[in-house]
Length: 324
Image (tube, rainbow, N blue to C red):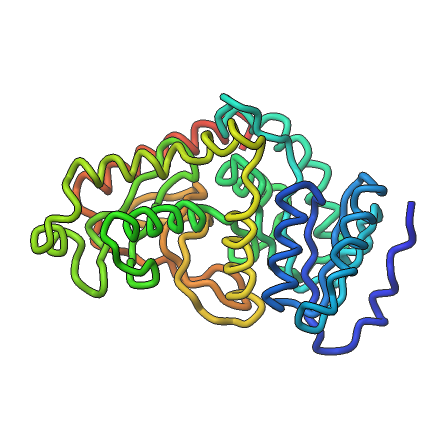
């Protein structure tokens, strides 16, 4: 194996982002992180030595065009030692036609080995799981790790929320930055839009629709369906999703490493959230340097609360199948 760099050589105050898995998602996430300058040092870990070293070298060759930083790659997990944040992208690849839940068995078995090794070398890091099915994987990894719930969370529905805002922007012809709406619940088939809290330019979505007529109830249903199924379309066409999840992941990383206290729908362990406990699901949450903090309790309407509980039951049932 290659020799991991001496962690002591990293200057004090320099943030280190460790990315586990140098596949399409891991490499894209590293690329986006370097371009955005969210961490001064990015390290890639993968068991495939040739792949991880090649990805790090390729990224290094573009360093002149990025904010100041450094990137390294190794097949030695010691490269993650002392990381401020660890992002796990390693896992079974989702095949065309395969649901996220069908990925769970192989991926959870990998986490049983991988997570304890990571916690041993980076016990104080904030951990973000990106590997699908992310809610089940996050719950299992949290139990395996023994870490405080605040310290480990999943990327959740941050990407799905971005898809939702993009589609609402396209239909309403309003800039996406003025569209505020969330996808909550599972990152998967039981996810749903929190329509009751959505607004465009500060105007509640229902009022905006009534005033402008640009979005019909049929349009909203079509948008929700497109958000839920777009990943399958992308996987059918190119084999994997990587660009948008890389950008979404970096948005979350930025909120952690810069302690922004951004409100993001990450997947975390819920305890008595609107009566829901002992499951990892995505709800709007405050994310900062200490990890995931307060989960915001929006005024879910009756239908939305029923959908959230159904989503929780779905994920909890899958976790139980694997002994968690």
